[in-house]
Image (cartoon, rainbow, N blue to C red):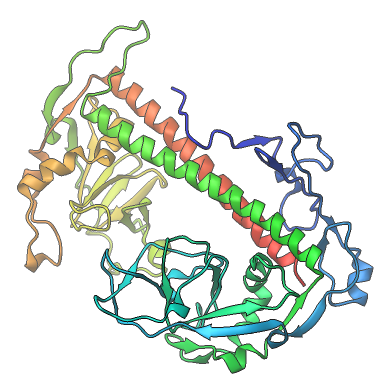
Length: 475
């Protein structure tokens, strides 16, 4: 089945970073990543795509001058200028100290939590309390450059550009709106990228005052920061280039989100039997049959007599994972012989709820040959009448949660564990198809998973590439 999304216009030709209407070909042998990712230099493109080439600076020249970047567009030369940032700031103003609530009405207020590394984040929105008066000078305008003056030691100094993400919004007193003079390109994109380079972030932390949990960078200290910048045309070229990289990441991210939405909707229709598959000859499969979980799964209670020390925990997002790697320390007891020993393909149900899994999570062991889990988990493996991949998708679809909800109650004495016994769990009824249709369903949904995983990998490669560019394109 072909999945059509709005981002089908994204193409990748021989590893070259390419977008409809814009193409970037990069000669980057010293980026710290494989040049195979980016294709050959001078690759011909079609449809009038614009080609931008970046070349490496001569190493001997770099040794003689400290203010020349390692990667540079070929039409530019000479050293970048270095000056205290106060010399290029024409105005700086803190926002207002407003009473606000996390509600969904009123005038939005942008706070420190809304400032990401180079972008605005609106996962959480805060609004002024009713009848709260405000200063019109605190209304954000498109292109405003915001500097986070107070946060944790790790996050203080974050910057982002306001790009009219909301029709109307204010900014609060933990944010400094900075206006630069005409020596900095007018969109503020260049200075935004500069502030997100490793060297600038490191320099800013030297000015932070406070503790690890609460730190501040005051204007008087920020003004001491020395920045290096090129001529306006080179600033504009760098900003344009990195913006193209960001757009590529955004397109891939949207593609991933659309694939995930498509999978979620399709999976619901499959397990509600609104979508049915046919056999190889185009014939309908038999009707699905109702079964108890205990009829299609065998409970696993084998103890860890072999002293396996691969302690697993259930991550709602990542499945059964090594506890030490997940928590960065082992939270299990020292004696593991009483734990259940799981083998690859086994399932474990965690009765505690987590984000996105109010009825607990059931996951399949796929990443390890064996592992052990707490006896608080309900563990089981597939019988011959149910295909493991199908069962995995069945639990992922949430159809079992509806039945769990009918019998489970949250008990205060159980520290958030749902009060569902082993007998109750295996008495839950589900409707399943014949093995051939199960296999068809599992193959289809697994193919979707691979598409999502591939897109995720592309996003991570692009982000890694961008980190390399930020390091090499700036001094």
